Image (cartoon, rainbow, N blue to C red; front, side):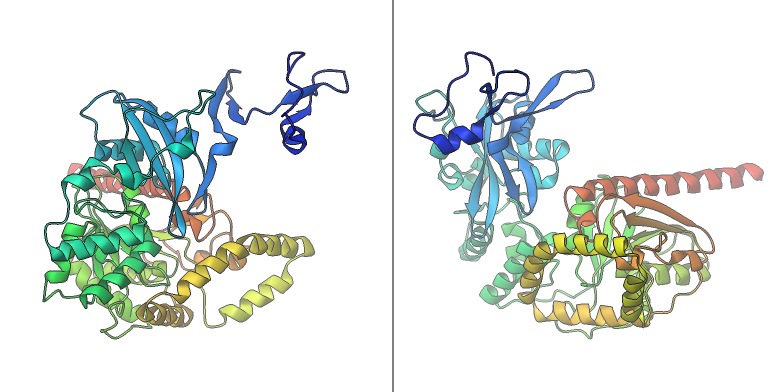
Length: 503
């Protein structure tokens, strides 16, 4: 603002009206200010911190992303002189591409990705990292983002140096490139590091099955996240199916066993596992029948019995640290109850937004809605309306899911409705979403107060039932779960020390 401000854009009255606004700090009626498009925030000490550009804000997988924030994180690395980040179209989605001028020749894309994962949410880590000598500029001296090359035109050295070595790897790499919207994929590049997520994993798994005539589990990409490993997997002739899937194998801490939700698959827990401590083994149970061959189970007791069989194979004795998401919390509870009754020690039973429902759940939900006040009804319907558009895309995506997934989901829904819980002999730790579903509007404890006779501990997580497992909410959930696991282990060590001392 001020007396030296330009009058506007030449022959562009519409743009002038948008960018040149009334100056609230001056008394003259014609005084104007210019909206620069820079975004800043005021810090508690009064300083202003530059965040990024309003016009450089994009949406990636439904999340609003400030490109300037990623650029600042990259330039904080000692090996980066300058960085520019853009959003590129990749099929039906957008992917982030970072263009980097290195100050050190030894810098590589893998190193930068690992660095960014510690600074930013996973959805903000670029799928492409391209090293360039310089940036193109516009005539007025600004970086010409539109003139930056397509990422495939200057792909990372990793993709170029480890190219497919035979026909099988070439066919596999082609499928990966198509799914990820890239021209080429190196055989040792990680699917999830390249921007892959659970829905893309389902699509890619389906394409691999059609191409190679090999039946794969939906968790194959977790077990084999590179072209090299997946090619090896499809060549194996006698791979036996197991409900237990290792999401993170490394670590000296006791293993944490986690049960699937209503959909039966464990792909949704990939981001949660990646946010856990690096020394925390994280194993998930997937529903039987996901392979389309074995019988589908529609009873919580049968599921608990099967999962306990595989649990004991993986870990012969307690203490056991168990958890489950939504419907999976019921199965985890039944597993914990049986283990405790057989004399085994339960280190932790952690339930992620699990509700207790019965066979009359649908009618009781209708009654609960009708019993709400007008204001409560209005607030609930407003929330439902805001989620409706997001839900449409998820429902369309669900139509393309493999038939076994749909069958498993229906079976789990039946199991949830007919399950009758028993009073728990161990404490229940509930991680509850702050934005409650209808059945939680008048139920602050998700129905657990009647059954948690040994104690009920509640941790509230910002978000709703679905997005607490997604970025950026999943970081808060993982942090709370990590903290509670560490507390449980410390309490057990303290109890054992006291027992030894009392002798």
